[in-house]
Image (cartoon, rainbow, N blue to C red; front, side, top):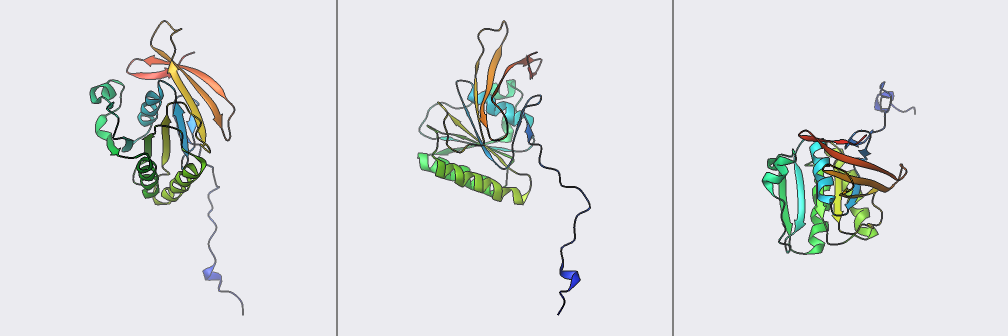
Amino acid sequence: MYPDPMQHARLARQPHRPDPGQPLLGPIRLARARVHEAHGPARHLFAVLLARAMTGSVFWIMPGWEAARLHGPGLAGLGLDPGRITFVQADHARDLLWTIEEVLRSGAVPLVVGELPGPPGLTPMRRMHLAAEAGSGKGTPPLGLVLTPEGGSAGAESRWHMAPDHGQGRTAWALTRERARSEVPKSWKIRRDGEGFALAP
């Protein structure tokens, strides 16, 4: 009994091209359907730059027990429409991780930012990676970003440190890719460029 040839999957004529990643600034890119980490005193600005570079809605998940909040007019001054952001507050640390995971799995938004009181362990990070992969089957592959004060999240796709660069004569920041699965460590200088941002020469 020969198999029915009509049941065979047809091969696509288009060549497979790997996802080049989500651009941030210049040649800097972050892998989609993965979870990354940013830390340092300017980690929130890193998240703003990433949201600026993307289209669509953003879920920003934060601890409900902390008084600090993002300032809407300040976000607008950085070129990010605060109307794109849905802010979610969680009452417990475990709820932060659960919410990040569930939003990634839903595939409802292209970017999920989670402010955490400390770096998550390997198991929660693996769960978030799996959730992001599951969400990618429902549309645009979502990108997860966790913000931690000191860095060190186990299993993060990449780790970034961002801080003000006080050695520059103008408003500038130092950005360092400390580790990534497919890229070497590297540092850049970022400065304001009109209403936007650019890599310093």
